Length: 317
Image (cartoon, rainbow, N blue to C red):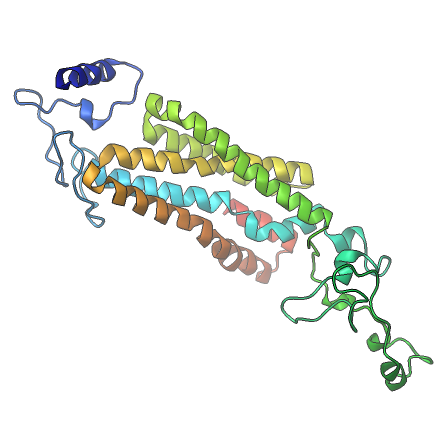
Protein backbone atom coordinates (compact mmCIF):
# COMPACT_ATOMS: atom_id res chain seq x y z
CA UNK A 1 0.00 0.00 0.00
CA UNK A 2 2.84 2.38 0.83
CA UNK A 3 4.53 1.61 -2.48
CA UNK A 4 1.27 2.13 -4.36
CA UNK A 5 0.67 5.48 -2.63
CA UNK A 6 4.22 6.57 -3.49
CA UNK A 7 3.70 5.60 -7.13
CA UNK A 8 0.42 7.53 -7.36
CA UNK A 9 2.04 10.60 -5.81
CA UNK A 10 4.97 10.34 -8.21
CA UNK A 11 2.62 10.17 -11.20
CA UNK A 12 0.69 13.21 -9.94
CA UNK A 13 3.82 15.26 -9.34
CA UNK A 14 5.20 14.52 -12.83
CA UNK A 15 2.08 15.87 -14.57
CA UNK A 16 3.15 19.14 -16.26
CA UNK A 17 -0.25 20.85 -16.10
CA UNK A 18 -1.24 20.29 -12.52
CA UNK A 19 -0.80 22.45 -9.47
CA UNK A 20 2.02 20.95 -7.40
CA UNK A 21 1.60 21.11 -3.62
CA UNK A 22 4.54 20.98 -1.27
CA UNK A 23 4.19 17.19 -0.97
CA UNK A 24 5.65 16.99 -4.49
CA UNK A 25 8.95 18.59 -3.49
CA UNK A 26 11.83 16.24 -2.62
CA UNK A 27 12.38 15.87 1.09
CA UNK A 28 14.10 12.51 1.49
CA UNK A 29 17.74 12.19 2.42
CA UNK A 30 20.03 12.88 -0.49
CA UNK A 31 17.48 15.01 -2.35
CA UNK A 32 17.45 18.76 -2.74
CA UNK A 33 16.81 20.22 0.69
CA UNK A 34 13.72 22.26 1.42
CA UNK A 35 14.28 25.59 3.18
CA UNK A 36 13.75 25.61 6.91
CA UNK A 37 10.11 26.45 7.59
CA UNK A 38 8.97 28.92 10.25
CA UNK A 39 6.26 26.42 11.27
CA UNK A 40 6.76 22.89 12.53
CA UNK A 41 5.90 20.46 9.73
CA UNK A 42 5.25 16.75 9.31
CA UNK A 43 6.75 14.36 6.76
CA UNK A 44 4.56 15.88 4.03
CA UNK A 45 5.76 19.42 4.79
CA UNK A 46 2.34 20.38 6.15
CA UNK A 47 2.26 22.60 9.23
CA UNK A 48 1.34 20.91 12.48
CA UNK A 49 0.61 24.22 14.22
CA UNK A 50 -1.35 27.41 13.60
CA UNK A 51 0.68 30.39 14.90
CA UNK A 52 -1.57 33.25 13.78
CA UNK A 53 0.95 36.01 14.44
CA UNK A 54 3.93 34.27 12.82
CA UNK A 55 3.69 36.09 9.51
CA UNK A 56 7.33 36.95 8.76
CA UNK A 57 9.58 35.21 6.27
CA UNK A 58 9.63 34.62 2.55
CA UNK A 59 7.22 32.39 0.69
CA UNK A 60 9.83 29.62 0.87
CA UNK A 61 10.32 30.04 4.61
CA UNK A 62 6.73 30.58 5.72
CA UNK A 63 4.35 29.32 3.02
CA UNK A 64 1.85 27.97 5.55
CA UNK A 65 0.89 31.18 7.35
CA UNK A 66 1.21 33.25 4.19
CA UNK A 67 -1.32 30.90 2.59
CA UNK A 68 -3.57 31.07 5.65
CA UNK A 69 -3.71 34.85 5.72
CA UNK A 70 -3.91 35.18 1.94
CA UNK A 71 -6.89 32.84 1.81
CA UNK A 72 -8.59 34.51 4.78
CA UNK A 73 -8.13 38.12 3.66
CA UNK A 74 -9.07 37.42 0.04
CA UNK A 75 -12.15 35.51 1.20
CA UNK A 76 -13.10 38.43 3.48
CA UNK A 77 -12.74 40.95 0.64
CA UNK A 78 -14.70 38.73 -1.73
CA UNK A 79 -17.64 38.57 0.69
CA UNK A 80 -17.37 42.32 1.21
CA UNK A 81 -17.95 42.75 -2.50
CA UNK A 82 -20.54 39.97 -2.79
CA UNK A 83 -22.87 41.63 -0.28
CA UNK A 84 -21.99 45.26 -1.10
CA UNK A 85 -25.27 45.93 -2.89
CA UNK A 86 -27.49 44.49 -0.15
CA UNK A 87 -27.38 47.44 2.31
CA UNK A 88 -27.82 49.87 -0.58
CA UNK A 89 -30.67 47.97 -2.21
CA UNK A 90 -33.42 50.47 -1.35
CA UNK A 91 -31.43 53.35 -2.81
CA UNK A 92 -30.71 51.25 -5.89
CA UNK A 93 -34.45 50.46 -6.15
CA UNK A 94 -35.23 54.19 -5.95
CA UNK A 95 -32.76 54.85 -8.77
CA UNK A 96 -34.49 52.14 -10.85
CA UNK A 97 -37.86 53.80 -10.02
CA UNK A 98 -39.46 50.56 -8.89
CA UNK A 99 -40.51 51.68 -5.40
CA UNK A 100 -44.25 51.37 -4.72
CA UNK A 101 -44.63 55.07 -3.98
CA UNK A 102 -42.86 55.93 -7.24
CA UNK A 103 -45.03 53.67 -9.39
CA UNK A 104 -48.23 54.43 -7.49
CA UNK A 105 -48.12 57.87 -5.82
CA UNK A 106 -50.17 57.72 -2.59
CA UNK A 107 -52.00 60.92 -3.51
CA UNK A 108 -53.44 59.13 -6.56
CA UNK A 109 -53.61 55.58 -5.19
CA UNK A 110 -54.31 55.93 -1.45
CA UNK A 111 -55.86 52.45 -1.17
CA UNK A 112 -52.87 50.39 -2.32
CA UNK A 113 -52.54 47.45 0.04
CA UNK A 114 -48.82 48.04 0.77
CA UNK A 115 -49.81 51.51 2.03
CA UNK A 116 -52.74 50.27 4.11
CA UNK A 117 -50.45 47.76 5.84
CA UNK A 118 -47.51 50.14 6.18
CA UNK A 119 -45.97 50.90 9.56
CA UNK A 120 -42.92 53.11 9.92
CA UNK A 121 -40.44 51.17 12.05
CA UNK A 122 -38.65 54.29 13.30
CA UNK A 123 -41.66 56.37 14.33
CA UNK A 124 -44.00 53.38 14.76
CA UNK A 125 -46.71 55.41 13.04
CA UNK A 126 -49.23 53.87 10.66
CA UNK A 127 -50.27 55.01 7.20
CA UNK A 128 -53.84 54.48 8.38
CA UNK A 129 -53.92 57.28 10.92
CA UNK A 130 -56.91 55.87 12.82
CA UNK A 131 -56.43 52.19 12.07
CA UNK A 132 -57.37 49.73 9.30
CA UNK A 133 -60.81 48.34 8.57
CA UNK A 134 -59.33 44.81 8.71
CA UNK A 135 -56.22 43.69 10.53
CA UNK A 136 -55.09 41.11 7.93
CA UNK A 137 -56.68 42.07 4.61
CA UNK A 138 -57.52 45.79 4.78
CA UNK A 139 -59.38 47.48 1.94
CA UNK A 140 -59.40 50.96 3.45
CA UNK A 141 -58.47 52.93 6.54
CA UNK A 142 -60.93 53.65 9.31
CA UNK A 143 -62.71 56.99 8.82
CA UNK A 144 -61.86 60.07 10.85
CA UNK A 145 -63.52 59.81 14.30
CA UNK A 146 -66.33 62.30 14.96
CA UNK A 147 -64.48 63.90 17.86
CA UNK A 148 -61.48 64.59 15.62
CA UNK A 149 -63.71 66.13 12.97
CA UNK A 150 -65.23 68.40 15.60
CA UNK A 151 -61.87 69.24 17.18
CA UNK A 152 -60.27 70.32 13.90
CA UNK A 153 -63.48 71.65 12.33
CA UNK A 154 -63.04 69.34 9.35
CA UNK A 155 -66.52 70.08 7.99
CA UNK A 156 -65.46 73.67 7.29
CA UNK A 157 -61.74 73.26 6.56
CA UNK A 158 -60.34 69.79 5.93
CA UNK A 159 -56.81 70.96 5.20
CA UNK A 160 -55.57 69.79 8.59
CA UNK A 161 -53.70 66.45 8.38
CA UNK A 162 -55.93 65.06 11.13
CA UNK A 163 -58.92 65.45 8.83
CA UNK A 164 -57.62 62.66 6.58
CA UNK A 165 -57.62 58.97 7.51
CA UNK A 166 -54.37 58.60 5.50
CA UNK A 167 -50.94 59.76 6.56
CA UNK A 168 -48.55 59.53 3.58
CA UNK A 169 -45.85 61.38 5.53
CA UNK A 170 -45.02 58.18 7.42
CA UNK A 171 -44.06 56.41 4.19
CA UNK A 172 -40.33 55.93 3.65
CA UNK A 173 -38.46 57.27 0.65
CA UNK A 174 -38.82 53.87 -1.01
CA UNK A 175 -41.75 51.67 -0.04
CA UNK A 176 -40.55 48.15 -0.83
CA UNK A 177 -42.63 45.97 1.47
CA UNK A 178 -44.06 42.49 0.91
CA UNK A 179 -46.36 42.24 -2.08
CA UNK A 180 -44.70 45.00 -4.09
CA UNK A 181 -42.86 44.65 -7.40
CA UNK A 182 -39.87 46.23 -5.69
CA UNK A 183 -39.65 43.43 -3.12
CA UNK A 184 -40.00 40.86 -5.90
CA UNK A 185 -37.08 42.35 -7.86
CA UNK A 186 -34.81 42.46 -4.80
CA UNK A 187 -35.78 38.90 -3.89
CA UNK A 188 -35.08 37.58 -7.39
CA UNK A 189 -31.71 39.36 -7.40
CA UNK A 190 -30.80 37.67 -4.12
CA UNK A 191 -31.72 34.26 -5.54
CA UNK A 192 -29.64 34.94 -8.66
CA UNK A 193 -26.67 35.93 -6.53
CA UNK A 194 -26.75 32.66 -4.59
CA UNK A 195 -27.50 30.53 -7.68
CA UNK A 196 -24.39 31.65 -9.54
CA UNK A 197 -22.05 30.85 -6.67
CA UNK A 198 -23.38 27.27 -6.60
CA UNK A 199 -22.40 26.68 -10.23
CA UNK A 200 -19.00 28.31 -9.85
CA UNK A 201 -18.21 26.32 -6.70
CA UNK A 202 -18.85 23.07 -8.57
CA UNK A 203 -16.51 24.12 -11.39
CA UNK A 204 -13.74 25.21 -9.01
CA UNK A 205 -12.78 21.65 -8.09
CA UNK A 206 -11.14 21.00 -11.46
CA UNK A 207 -9.77 24.54 -11.76
CA UNK A 208 -8.05 24.36 -8.38
CA UNK A 209 -6.36 21.07 -9.24
CA UNK A 210 -5.28 22.44 -12.60
CA UNK A 211 -4.12 25.97 -11.71
CA UNK A 212 -3.74 26.02 -7.91
CA UNK A 213 -5.46 28.19 -5.29
CA UNK A 214 -3.37 31.34 -5.83
CA UNK A 215 -4.22 31.67 -9.52
CA UNK A 216 -7.87 30.70 -9.06
CA UNK A 217 -8.39 33.10 -6.16
CA UNK A 218 -6.78 35.96 -8.06
CA UNK A 219 -8.97 35.23 -11.06
CA UNK A 220 -12.16 35.16 -9.00
CA UNK A 221 -11.27 38.35 -7.16
CA UNK A 222 -10.48 40.17 -10.41
CA UNK A 223 -13.74 39.12 -12.08
CA UNK A 224 -15.78 39.97 -8.99
CA UNK A 225 -14.16 43.41 -8.81
CA UNK A 226 -15.11 44.06 -12.43
CA UNK A 227 -18.77 43.16 -11.80
CA UNK A 228 -18.93 45.27 -8.63
CA UNK A 229 -17.56 48.24 -10.58
CA UNK A 230 -20.08 47.65 -13.38
CA UNK A 231 -22.87 47.70 -10.79
CA UNK A 232 -22.54 51.48 -10.86
CA UNK A 233 -24.27 51.38 -14.25
CA UNK A 234 -27.47 49.72 -12.93
CA UNK A 235 -30.56 51.43 -14.33
CA UNK A 236 -33.25 48.74 -14.56
CA UNK A 237 -34.37 45.54 -12.80
CA UNK A 238 -33.00 43.23 -15.49
CA UNK A 239 -29.43 44.53 -15.26
CA UNK A 240 -29.66 44.69 -11.46
CA UNK A 241 -30.51 40.98 -11.35
CA UNK A 242 -27.81 40.20 -13.95
CA UNK A 243 -25.13 42.07 -12.01
CA UNK A 244 -26.10 40.34 -8.75
CA UNK A 245 -25.85 37.01 -10.60
CA UNK A 246 -22.35 37.80 -11.87
CA UNK A 247 -21.11 39.19 -8.56
CA UNK A 248 -22.28 35.95 -6.95
CA UNK A 249 -19.20 34.18 -8.26
CA UNK A 250 -17.28 35.92 -5.46
CA UNK A 251 -18.99 33.55 -3.04
CA UNK A 252 -17.09 30.65 -4.61
CA UNK A 253 -13.89 31.92 -2.96
CA UNK A 254 -15.01 29.82 0.00
CA UNK A 255 -13.94 26.69 -1.90
CA UNK A 256 -10.50 28.13 -2.63
CA UNK A 257 -10.17 29.19 0.99
CA UNK A 258 -10.75 25.67 2.25
CA UNK A 259 -8.66 23.99 -0.45
CA UNK A 260 -5.73 26.32 0.21
CA UNK A 261 -5.67 25.73 3.95
CA UNK A 262 -6.11 21.98 3.52
CA UNK A 263 -2.95 21.89 1.39
CA UNK A 264 -0.89 23.65 4.01
CA UNK A 265 -1.95 22.16 7.34
CA UNK A 266 -1.65 18.68 8.82
CA UNK A 267 -4.68 16.66 10.01
CA UNK A 268 -4.11 17.57 13.66
CA UNK A 269 -4.70 21.30 12.96
CA UNK A 270 -6.37 21.53 9.55
CA UNK A 271 -9.87 21.63 11.08
CA UNK A 272 -8.96 24.63 13.22
CA UNK A 273 -7.23 26.33 10.29
CA UNK A 274 -10.20 25.81 7.96
CA UNK A 275 -12.75 26.93 10.55
CA UNK A 276 -10.76 30.05 11.49
CA UNK A 277 -10.10 31.07 7.89
CA UNK A 278 -13.73 30.46 6.86
CA UNK A 279 -15.17 32.21 9.90
CA UNK A 280 -13.07 35.33 9.56
CA UNK A 281 -13.68 35.35 5.81
CA UNK A 282 -17.45 35.11 6.23
CA UNK A 283 -17.22 38.11 8.54
CA UNK A 284 -16.90 40.21 5.39
CA UNK A 285 -20.58 39.63 4.68
CA UNK A 286 -21.47 41.28 7.98
CA UNK A 287 -18.89 44.04 7.91
CA UNK A 288 -20.13 45.23 4.51
CA UNK A 289 -23.56 46.01 6.04
CA UNK A 290 -21.86 48.69 8.15
CA UNK A 291 -18.97 49.60 5.89
CA UNK A 292 -21.02 50.43 2.79
CA UNK A 293 -23.50 52.64 4.65
CA UNK A 294 -21.62 54.24 7.57
CA UNK A 295 -18.15 54.54 6.03
CA UNK A 296 -19.03 55.26 2.39
CA UNK A 297 -22.67 56.02 1.50
CA UNK A 298 -23.65 58.36 4.35
CA UNK A 299 -20.43 60.44 4.27
CA UNK A 300 -20.80 60.88 0.51
CA UNK A 301 -24.37 62.11 0.98
CA UNK A 302 -23.29 64.49 3.73
CA UNK A 303 -20.58 65.79 1.39
CA UNK A 304 -23.31 66.92 -0.99
CA UNK A 305 -23.77 64.00 -3.38
CA UNK A 306 -27.27 62.97 -4.38
CA UNK A 307 -28.24 59.48 -3.10
CA UNK A 308 -28.34 58.20 -6.68
CA UNK A 309 -24.72 59.26 -7.14
CA UNK A 310 -23.56 58.39 -3.62
CA UNK A 311 -24.36 54.67 -3.83
CA UNK A 312 -22.64 54.42 -7.22
CA UNK A 313 -19.49 56.13 -5.94
CA UNK A 314 -19.57 53.86 -2.87
CA UNK A 315 -19.38 50.77 -5.07
CA UNK A 316 -16.33 52.15 -6.87
CA UNK A 317 -14.53 52.53 -3.56
